[in-house]
Length: 257
Image 1 (cartoon, rainbow, N blue to C red):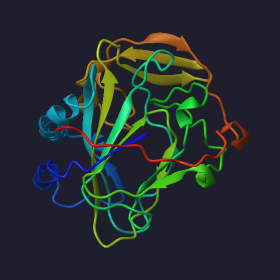
Image 2: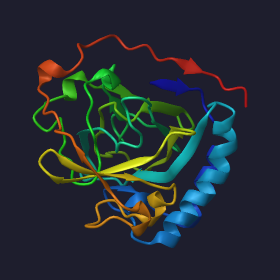
Image 3: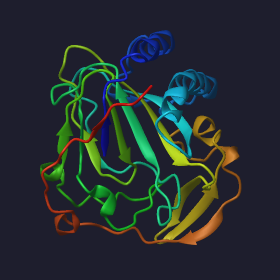
Image 4: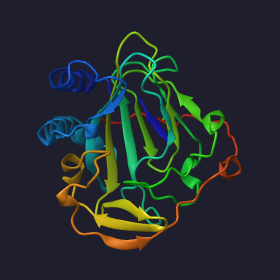
């Protein structure tokens, strides 16, 4: 986990994209990839990419931006995101992919700040995709997660394997975050779908898959291509499998951009 110092110079531009594309946050928890309007997803991705990519290229060598989204919480009791890992984007035995999370408002425990499991990337391999079970559904992990309060424009970067969560937004305004997924260049981009216990389909997908596909849809977008059979049994963790609690130091980096 790395917390970058504020990217305040791009926040007004990100906010303008949100205002023109959304105006207000949809009810509860929402991400652009939940929309079934491909043209809308392409617009959001394209406009965010144009802002984020030059900034990210100055920070990350040998990585590419796969997906950019707004991730929002409206005010109210809805919108709790329980502990989970993000999708698998690469073969995590050999490579890692990352979530980049930029709140456009100050975030804390009152309005939906993210909490993460320190050293969570060291947990044994899981595969996350369409219809894959949550390896942590038997674990009460909340006491192990550390809340990351952030100012508008701070940038949180974490491995997609890291367990994370966020509470409901009890503030007085929408919680709006611009986020994107990064993966190494030259590494196949993957998506998995579970079809039976211990039986997966593995897809090598193009970047357009993430705007073609609607998260949670019953079928994958055609751009996923043809699957390759794979076998993997998702572990089912208990609290004993989680890393021991550690004191977290926030590694701040001031980008030279």
